[in-house]
Structure formats: structure tokens, C-alpha cells
Amino acid sequence: MKLYRAMQTNHFTIRPKRIIYHLFILSLPILVSTPCLSQIADESSDQIWTVGHNRWTVEEEYRFGKWVDENITEDFFIRYRTPTDCADAVYAIRWIYARIAHLPAAATTKEGKLIGHWSTKWKHLPTHPEWQRDQRFHAALLHILSETWTGTLPLDTYPIRISSDSVTPGTVLCMTESHCGIVGHVSYGGSYGHPLQTWESMLPVKVRKLVLRTFFSSRPESKTHTGLVKFRWPALENGRWVYLPAKGHPFYSEEQYTAGFYEGYEDFVEAVGRRVDPVDYQPTEKIVNVMGTVTRLLRDRVPIVLTGHQVCSKGGCPEGWDLWEIYNTRGYDGMINLLMGRLSEITKLHHLDPEMVEKMMRAISIDISKNRSVTFYDVYQNSSWLSTHPKDSIEARWGLNKCETIQAEIRATRDTIAFVEATYGKRDPKYAKFSIHLEEEILSRLSEQLTKSECQIGAR
Image 1: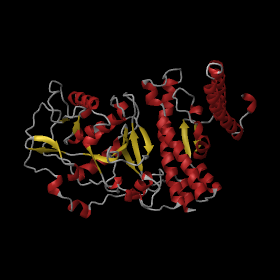
Image 2 (image 1 turned 180 degrees about the horizontal axis):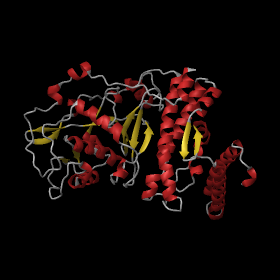
Image 3 (image 1 turned 90 degrees about the vertical axis):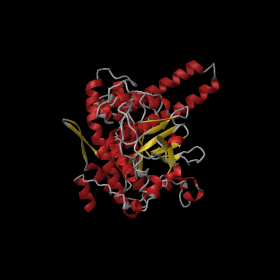
Image 4 (image 1 turned 120 degrees about the vertical axis):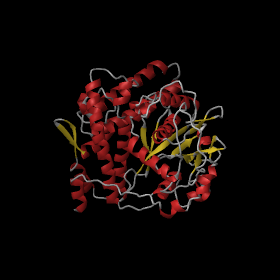
């Protein structure tokens, strides 16, 4: 009953995870990780920004993580008109914070040169106390992004130990040699299925939304420097800025590359999850926390859908255009679908009462427009049919006219089959047979959905 009352009032809480400094901070090898305070740069007003006595420390890394957690959103780079791909987003987030906090920042270019905040190349451009209005900084940032890529990240980062005090927001995840992301949130209580969520961009380079994903990565390789890493700290040495040696950083460890790291775990993803959040949560606690996360995502989605419909409903906002990038909900919908699946998984795995879970879902109301609301259970039932396109009707955006959507998908699939038959039936019969088989499988699943949803079959 306590659980149900909590759901009725929609008071969702994720168990907080406090970072314990205590003896950890006091025991750090300060002489190794902190440059001598007497080494102060001979700074010029012509450089990108000044840092004075400011240097990266463990405390500054935690402040950076807090800033990432609170400020990076899916539309962050749209708001500041910054084009990105996956590596660009990672570098830009670090450089923007360093600029805000007046901390040292550096990057290794494709030619192997170290460039950083001390550069005077853009001295002809005006600067400004606010980073978003600083023309000099913006010009330098765009140059840095054009000169770096996933191949330079191993030179600018170091591998870290995997624990709750080291894997914080702002940590970089190199999934492969050609793709990376940055940890955006660390969540506990089973609210996402994994404690880490990453912000990611992609190719080609353009102004776009970031995508929030649940942590996923194959087993990291030490030779390619994949896995969980942090940015190295620039330090002043004999009047020149250089990087601290990788092993001189307080979080440095190569444990994730060892065979022992995986003992007792299914894979790298599970090993990371359990080391970051080792608590065994009760199934009902997981259900409450996942529902809380989804409810927040659904309510955050409402104004995007409403504004998008107002701006794009008359045929504007073609896919890929700026307005489509602003008002599509692809990132939200992907995460919502994933977490709805998580709810089903928890319910079945732990043999929870489906009627109890449904009652909890029906108790949550989402106002999707001024005069209309849906329940959490409505969205749960229709989540596969949420429309991401801003030009679609409000009903379509929330999966409320899924019968029409399914029927439209069926018609489109049949058209594809007819096209393949006409185009490749005689020219390349093997390809035609293969392609048609795939489309027929899709058609079969759609027909099952149509029947399961009790749609009017005659309308097909």
C-alpha cells in the first residue's frame, strides 16, 4: 500500500549517491597531480582565455561532472549553434566548461601538435566575459573541433579505475576507434537499467541534438585506448604547457583491460554497472524508479511536441532541416521505448502482479495538451507507435491513432514489395527474393499488431 500511495502522488525519487571525499582526497599524491603554484603562466590578453592560478584537481573534476549533469541537454549544441560529430561533442563540452571556469584546456591536433587556451592565433577577434558571446573563443573552438577526431582522443585522455568516485559525468566513453560519447548522468536505484547514461552525437558534422543512451560498449582494448577514460590535465612546465603523464592522474588505472575485471560478470557492461552501483535493489523499488524516470521524460516531451506541432503542422520541417532537428523527439522516444521494455522485463522476471503494475501506471496522468491527458498506461501500451516527426498530429505523436499508423506502415510495406518485384524480379531474382522475404516478415508483424490492437481490419 505504501508503494501504491507513492505512485498515486507521483513522488518519484532516485536514491542519491554521495561522492565521499574523506580520506580519498587527503591521501592523493598532491605533489604528483598538482603543479607547483609558483609556476604561473606569463599570460597575455591576446590568448583565448586566461587561467591565472586555476588548475585541474579532483575537486574541479567533480565540479565539471556536476556542470555536465545539470547543463548538458539534448538541444545544448542547437541552442549555441555548434556543429558536432561524436568526438566534437566530447571535446566541446570539456572546452566550454574550461572556458567558463577559467581552467587550462588542451587538445592534440591531427598533426600531433598541442594547442590550448594559451594560443594567441585569434587575438584579432573580440572577447567577452560570457563564453557564448565570446567571438574569440567560438572561433578557436570551431578550429579545435576541425583539428581533432576520435583518433586524437587517446592522446588527450587516460584510462581510469571503475568505481562510483571515478566514473562521474564528464567521463568519456570510447566505444570503438571511430565512435565515442560522454557520460551525462549517473543514476541509481535501477531507474535506467544501468547507472550510466551517455550523450552522443554522430556523423556527418552538423548542428543537431545529442542523443541520450543507456551505457553500452564492447570489451575495451588497451591498444586502441577504448573504454572509460578522462581528459588529461594540462600543466605548466618550464614556461610551456604540457600534459601531466597519464599515470600521474589520481584516477588512473588499467584495470578495465585485465581479465580479472570481468570475473563474475556477463560482460563489460554488467561489470561497469555493478562496480559503479553494487546495490541489489528490490523489484518494486526498481519499478517505482523506472516509472519516475519515464514520467519525467514524458512530461519533458510535452512542450516539444506542442511547439513542434504549432510550427511544423502545415507541411514545414522536412526531416534533416534545422526545425526538424529542434522539434523531433527521436532521442526521447528511443529512451522511452527502452525503459518501457525495462518495465515489462522487471515485471516478468520477478513475477510481479501485472494488475498491480497496471494500476500504478493508470494512476499517473500526463497532460499532453490544454484539454487532453493520457495515463502512463496509455503510453505504455502505445509506446511503439509514438511519432517522432514534428509535423504529425498530437494524437500521432502520442501513439493514440496507432491503428492508422499501423495501416500506413502496412501500405508502405506492400508498396515496397511491389517496387522490388517490378524493379528486381527479373533483373536480380535472388536479391528480389531476399528483400521481399524481409518485407513480408515486417508485414506479418504489422498484421499481428493490427489484430492485437483490435483495429478495424476493414480500414486497411
